[in-house]
Length: 342
Image 1 (cartoon, one colour):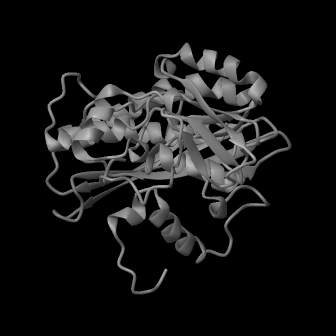
Image 2 (cartoon, one colour):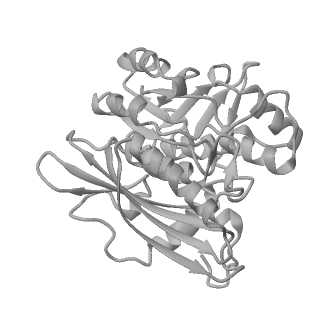
């Protein structure tokens, strides 16, 4: 990036502008991995450090600035714990510990902070994740919007292979575990005061119990949760990093009617809205139906579908076979269409 570039909200919104921004920042660093493990250059959900012949440490960092702090279906504390825990799971790791740093605006009521941290702690407890360290800062009014949280998750991978988002193979089936865009749509609906006949809520939820056993089975080549930048960003990262084409069937993609309604009202693209309790998986084809059935046993996975496959055509691109028989290119969005969703 040019030195006089003015940083915009989209530079942190999970799309193509953020890719350019991150690449510029990462180039500043000299040492970016430990003994050949996954590091900053890979821009995956986390990094890896080999700690023994059979064990790999997975480390993932995140910051959370959602607005409003309490939103339909969740809150800042639940979101911070969930996002970090899920990033460890996306690399096939068992989450074991987390750190928590908070920035608080002067004048914030303690009752609000206690409620957020209690939600964070409850989510960690439910997933057997220990809160092992943290930091707290209080800043003058106006320097923080109420409360921000920054976390680092730690997990262990005992299988010989770490799941990485650059490992999609030609022939892999692409599975989505739920309807995309529910987190982003629920936040924007609340902010805009949209009245819906059905109560749209964020899908924010840890995916440990649903996906970790599958990840440990060795049939998953790649896995990703489509948070900032949404499903379109996550799928394009699969395709570009793995140098495969992804061919999807539009009719197979589960669509939540309320999400679709918000998108039609506001002219948004469902594929660019974030999810916080959903993942995409690239699975060996002969095990795809079995994996799908296992996911559908869980409440968070009841709408799971096989939506397409990886191909040696359209390398690096995502192509959707539309319901009317045509094809369209699904490009990576510039970023999340609304700020501060996670």
